[in-house]
Image (tube, rainbow, N blue to C red):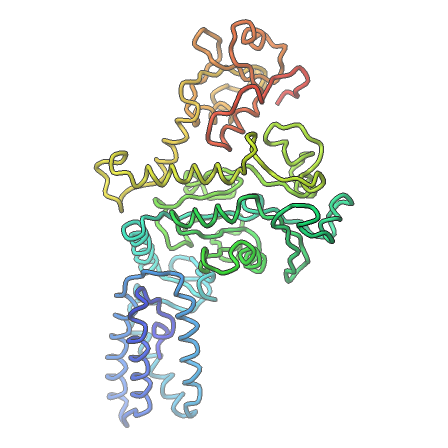
Length: 479
């Protein structure tokens, strides 16, 4: 059997029985090999042509069934192992000849890395690599199927600090020890798990609202996990998040699947980039050409070791909330300023993205398969601070050009107008010290005076935050 025979990706599972039957007929033919080499070559050439069609022509409707198919195929191949040794030798020779006949563009091969594209798909099946032509075909077919038949986009989810927080047991503080022995009924905290990974035993806390978030998001998106952690760790976390394997369907990508050792990229996903939304706690881990797909999440710090890793004293510090301890030591959990779960706000944002993308009125003139979700994200982001005019005071050194500073750029991304001078049209002064001249002007003129955290939190929440929650004080450190 050829390489292409062993490892095809069937795009339509309905064709599976017919394909396997064809393989059985092929094996039967091999057992009756003719005496002359010419006859052998003619038979295998006919077979290879048939298999090339079987490899290329079906349409992929369910990526989730790929692993199951390949597993079943592996059992079928195992049955062939009892063929006599002389028969195996003959078939090996025929296979070598057949492989030369198969077009490289149509071949799906069991090798760790595709020589033409360098893209690995081991998360779908161990050692699987795809050629450039097949990758493009599968991306288009999978995405078109989701858009046209299921009204879904792709959603890629980071793990650590986005959906959950993990710490090793030996790094837990004395005030966190209760989590090792007490049950949920004792401390009322949900989704705390001790997990045995191949390298260590860890404790993982899932982000509040995670079950509802994943279930409802899966109605609008095809969900995948992408982490720079190890494959073993990624699979263990996927089991916690999706015990029945109904949501991710094997789409769990880890560091070993990435084409870049230090950064994530969408090139190893069977999805068109124009239809992908990413949730991650940072854009910087993604390749530059994928950063417009990213919605940045505030990091979920439940454990003390996580806070220490990022140089903060409390879990709430990134929200501008004063507290001196992590959630784990306080025996509480993350919520927004209105008492709701942060993931509930993200889910609402994803609904807006989905609605605009599939709305014929909003994107009139664009065929569904040609639409791009990235402009949709920019449209929504531009609405957040629309109508606000900001002036900054003592935020950056005087030798720094204002419009090059990240905070200035961020405010403009959120739809605000920025200025270096105060005037009656200014709505906000963003200051690091309440005693500056511009700060005093804001108070005198009845303008909003806020600290820089107001912009950061507004970005995380994708909605304008109440200014009174971000007061500018005299003891705030200059950034």
